Each structure stands twice: as structure tokens, then as C-alpha cells.
Length: 256
Image 1 (cartoon, rainbow, N blue to C red):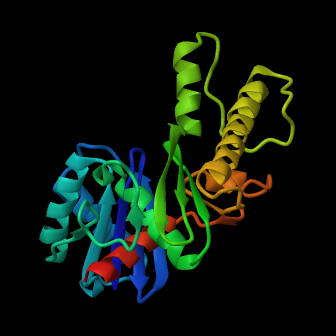
Image 2 (image 1 turned 135 degrees about the vertical axis):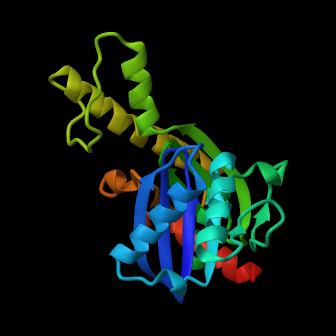
């Protein structure tokens, strides 16, 4: 079995693959300063509670945007699983033609998302929309060219900014809403957060269609923690919340 771990700014998501099949997925909050033993004991606990023998884990793959947490997780893999993990970083094989001016700047999670998207939808123009701490969009051509993308504040960051900078606004639950005109402060905030993300996404995808795909309509794949919120408004063609984990598995196979 293969253990794949994606460390984001807010959450760490993990998955256990038995061959190409995702047998288990899980999530926990992430932070830069987490100890080796915290990581190791958490992973052992998740596996045991799901009736998976930790000794069955033969390989581990990691992508991370938190360097300090990456170091601890690497050490935890060696201490608790007796294996050196594969880490997506600059120089690994991806099968993508990356058109960033400096390819090293592309986040490991975005590379993993792109690899899985291309695998599931070969020879198609693609936009991967990831709704997490940040909301990101990646444009990928049918020839596997990674054209680049867009990064903007995610829905949780937007809420935190409102609450911290406006004295009379309190935090609200992040939910999809079916009307744009709120009849209370909380409803107005929820509407703004939800439809604000949708409006930004539609504008960005439309401009990508023109700039990256010469007017062709790309397939839009949604992923990330909040992707399920946007599955119904006609914004996303496909929703795959664990796309990065699937990309991690593919990257490990490609670089084995």
C-alpha cells in the first residue's frame, strides 16, 4: 500500500492507495511547527482505527507548502514507517510542459492537481479550480502544457479579513446560499462570500478560455476543501476533492 500526504496551509489531507484505488482518505489541521512524534502517532492512529496495518505501507509520497512541517513529516516517515518518502519538488518527472518563467515557483499541490487532471482527462483543455486556503486556477492544454494560473484569497481568508477589519462583523458559517440579497448581516456576508467566489471564478475561467485556449471551452475540474460548495451553480464540470492525492500517487509511480 502507498500512503500519500498533502500538507496545505490549513489542512493536511492523506490517502492510502491499494494499487490505483483510494482505499482511505482523511484530514487534519496543519501548522508549520508540528513535531515528528505528533505526525507519526497521528498517522499510526488513523491507520489502526481503519483496520490498516502500518507495516503494509510500503511507500509514502508527500507534497507540501510548509517547509518546516515537511521536515518533521520526513523524519516521522523514517522513524515510524522505516521509509524515505518521495517528495514532489523541482526536478521530479511530471509529464507536464511547465511554461512558468521559473518552474520552481509552481506549488507542489498545483503540480499534483495538474498531473491527476491530465491523467483523468487526457487530450483535453483543462482548468483546475482549487478551493482551499487560497483559491487557485491552473490552465493546462490538451498537449499537457501547464500554461500558468491565478491565485486569489480563498473563501476562509476572505471571511477572516472581514471579521478582523470590520468592527461590527462577526464570523459566520461558510455555506452555499440560494439568494444573493441577504436580509441580515450574517446572510449578507454569506452571500458575498459565496457569490463573490463564483463571480471571480467565472471571470477568470472566461479569460483563460480566451488567453490560453484560443476561445475553446476547457473542462473545469473543481478540487480542494470547499469545492463541494460550488458543485451545483454550473461553474464546475467535475468535482474531485482528492485530486492532489491522486496526483501524488501518479507522481510516485512516474518517478519510481
